[in-house]
Image (cartoon, rainbow, N blue to C red; front, side, top):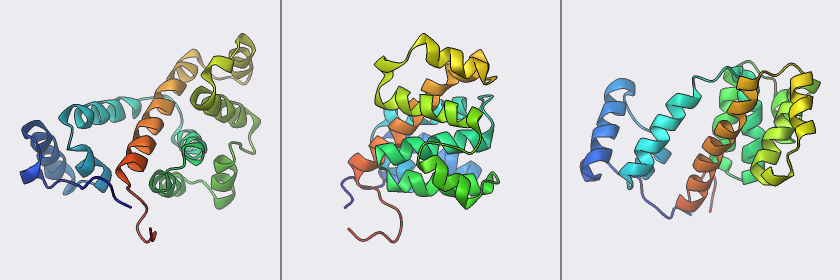
Length: 175
């Protein structure tokens, strides 16, 4: 059940209206999450900046989507799961890849190790050890990729938690 309403740019706070107008000018519209985040100009600006920054990671898009699917499965955001499954398909992932990612794994051991660490960064970050990082390095993951994992986790937590709090659900889901 929706708990927060999406805002039309005309009804948004001034800074949010500017941000929404800019997005609409470039893309033709905004999604429900962004329009709902517009209640808080600080949140909307932070999300947009963070999202843009995380698009510049060196993590391959298919692997990023696998990680996002694993994280959103754990967080429980149906809207995010649907969005990341669609993005995963667009990145060339099969339905089997998507199903395995939602289970927190992959047929590729290298990817599976990275996905597992990402889920632990979300669920139990204090459990991470030197051995976990050493294992990622042994699989060939760079320091840059390893450093980007918490950013991807944080972005997924932000969007998933926001959607759950706001009551945003996938289209067609009956409350």
